[in-house]
Length: 164
Image 1 (spheres, rainbow, N blue to C red):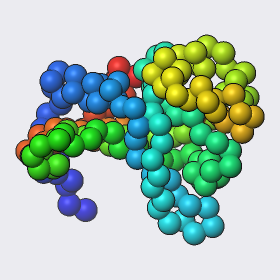
Image 2: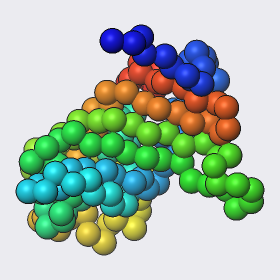
Image 3: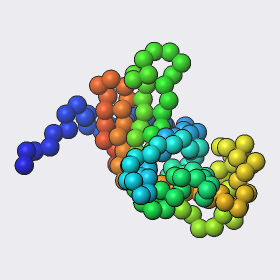
């Protein structure tokens, strides 16, 4: 079998680590990719994004949503954070793709008092629905990251590179 080459992937450095962590910390929403049960087709949705007190990605989702069913069936998923700026080519702006495993926190969001308080600091409008019985927190265990810092600036990141 031919040896795998990283192609244009640069060696991970502190600048890449800082940029990746900054994209994760600054994300207020993300694209979440899951595998649809029954069809095994990819499905992408937008979710509100926050972090746990330890800095891991976190979202709040309804048990009524299709992506909840998908994550319950198969916790393997991917998150994309980073949005293009107001000017310039969208492909020149940094973005971070994370391959993850989703973990539903036990009980309704309202029962997770510490996480509820932490999440509402970043998402105060979630107060409108966070206490509904069907809402749950989902934490994402990052397995690996792919940082595109703009043209010619691609890096592989480990959980440790992201401080996880």
